[in-house]
View 1 (spheres, rainbow, N blue to C red):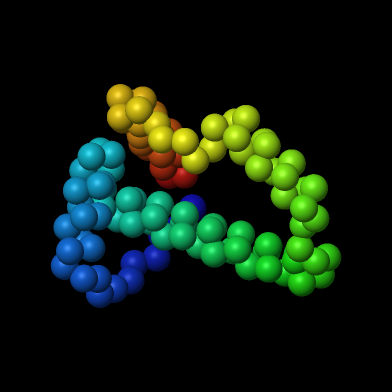
View 2: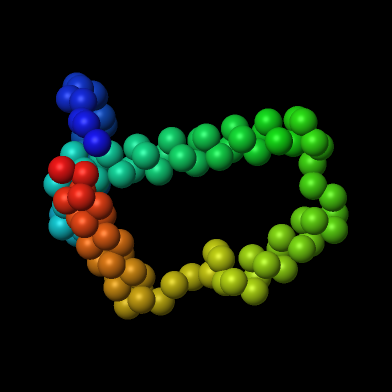
Length: 105
């Protein structure tokens, strides 16, 4: 994957928070910013895809919404994660990110 250098302006507080987050994950700030930008772009593209789907096919039925809510409840999506487990999950994801970066070079 190629990288493009660019100059951006960020609020000082944002920069400090990003630096701390990158440090906690053990990755360079540029890699952390790349990951954050990719996640934000993925969410935005997903939101647009949903809008387009609903425009073409209409909103989901009450039955479909209820089924989705059941699946979410059964899988535990959105439930708080205990701090120890959250830290272990974050460490594992950081490790995978580093492996991903190594394979890209």
